[in-house]
Image (tube, rainbow, N blue to C red; front, side):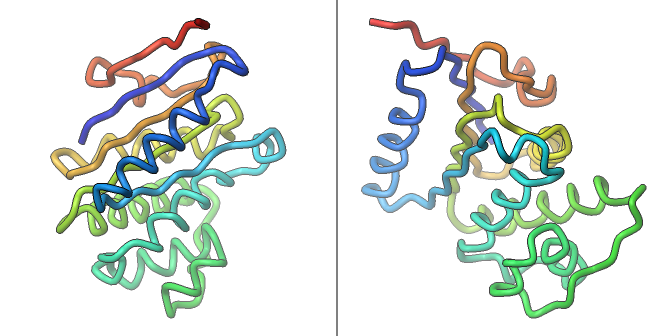
Length: 176
């Protein structure tokens, strides 16, 4: 996997840059999902992780995941019952992070197995803490999968050290 993190102050053009990247990648017939945080999502546990799972589930390859993982994803985001014909799994509170991380990791690996996938995540400064931890751990575990992860946020972003490690290319956008 390849990871890039864009940092810039508000109004510099991070969202537009990600949208333009998504447009170019789609024009080249690439599989792209784009999700973003918002102020309202910051206080909703696993909100962004649920949006990411929904984006990934819309891609071909999703059927390759285990039934238990599908049930965990439906628990994470009930709208995923559109893609997975499973009742939601009822996970114990202390196992939520582990189960959901493994399910998102499996989904990410499944949809990127036959064709590379670009995952573009905007406004990381609005991420909820649970999603930050889940996404960082899921991405860390996919190893050599063909995934391009591009995140964008303000300098004060609460980004997990797992996402901004030595393997992440960091780009700071300055005003013109």
